[in-house]
Length: 149
Image 1 (cartoon, rainbow, N blue to C red):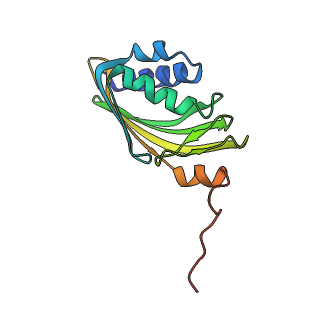
Image 2: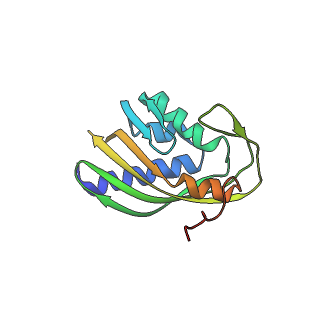
């Protein structure tokens, strides 16, 4: 597959996510896709897992959108450097089972995703996000850590 095709497919999937058109996004996803969200310690598998991952990102921020800032392409896949912008209007589940109640705050989080393809379909997605910045924007951590004397 041409590397530009991989980049185009990624942009189509992000656009479908932005518009809540999950079925359209899934047209470009392999049945056996594997997803890793490293900052959150979450894994998803298969097309329904991909749908669940999209729901996971939309639930606390229904207005959330992805903007692709840059892409590095190859015949095997594409690395997407992105920013996610949203308003925190619903509970945000935490890994320990608790939730952060809606804050109404706007967030802007940088992330990178590495997508691999086979036969024009996404077979893996690895997400690396700046969750410290997210928690700071939600007012859950100090803006800066104390420095040593």
